[in-house]
Length: 53
Picture 1 (cartoon, helix red, strand yellow):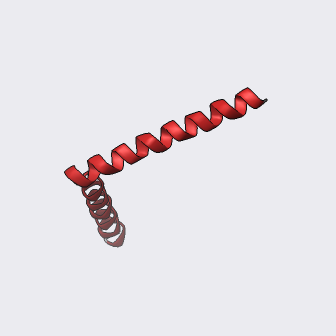
Picture 2 (tube, rainbow, N blue to C red):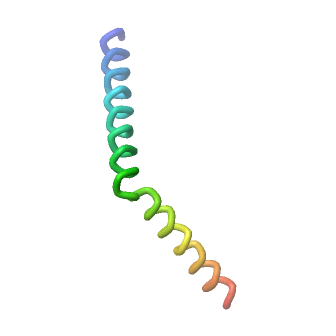
């Protein structure tokens, strides 16, 4: 059981490290901002389509 817990914690640490790298990369390239803008535009388009029915 102890080995399973160690492996789980190690996986979580690796995931957090990966997420940190993604956040740093996104700050440089604006990827997250672009994704948020696309989601907003898609939502607006859906509302326009749904509202026109």
